[in-house]
Length: 501
Image (cartoon, rainbow, N blue to C red):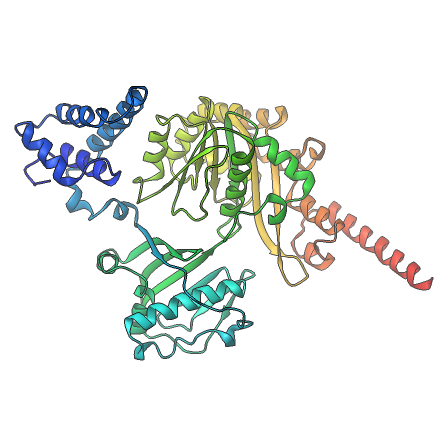
């Protein structure tokens, strides 16, 4: 819209356009038809009347609530005194997130890719055309999935390297120049995205190459441009396939039967939280008939609506932030709200409130263990609010799954995890603020379905899923260490007895 339009109306029209409800030309036409009145309420009512003319009457209330949420957003943004165009070129820039770049499935044969030596070289980047470089990058990313890599890094001043089984491995000796780093990392971007990156110097986006999805993060560093490419899992795995033991899957599935409350999936970056979250959504999608709203940054694993109606929203593309998406979702009649990342006070506060008001909220946090999750949850609030938040959390918390990936001793990785369920004892600990007692309570509540990292590793060792050496490298509980050694001695004695026969 033209600069003479009041900021509130500019932001209102901007949000409508981003949600596909109104084009900029239509907004300008409304503005002209209303004799250029500066009243946002009059303008919004005019737009709403136009929208309601084409929807069933039973949907009018929902549309009214949605328009009101956009009005609230417009007022909030206008208070900053910055116009939409001056603040950012598009909604995705508000969060650094860009719309997904999609390429059709390339004709690539990966059957001959058995090692890094079979990968295409990047050393001749300077001699390739832009189209050839685009094809080279698509080939590289597709081949790395075949080799089981989780991340590709292309950084100026460094050879290209990948992360495989949590370890950094170089795939070429060629040190990438600043010019080649720029061309490689922008080969799959649109011209508009290249321009935005030059201005912002940071960018996150989703990338689709046929059936393969990638999460891309680009940045500038002292030697030039750097890019990381996370390979998103191609399919939704079951909890058992991810590494959860059957006895614990039973308790996790029970958490997903609740119709309200808060369930948290936590762990460090790269621990597989996204895949666990996707598996949990898939379980709900199969066995319940509810409305699921998921907010992610970016959308990594696509969820198709089955028994449930699944609405996936991407931060930057479909909404400005987790905070605004969560606030708006409460007006969209959800049964289950999934939050890709809970990292600020308002998002956490709204999540706890939503879990108390009849919604099942499932979210992720970056924490090291289940007990510290409660401290992380409470510490974002000012001291004056913490007693109230403790009481709310004690009543709404359903459970915490904290996970990480470790070496299994057989040349691969395995998932180990803690499972905390909100029993009466746990609820009292939370409400009293004595979270230091949670770890011991979990260790002594195995019959209720809880487990610690060490107990999980002991169970995996007993099931033959981890070696003794791998378990002892991670385990800290002296009692369980002794049990592992006793079980090992017993197994060795049985082997010796069998050999004597």
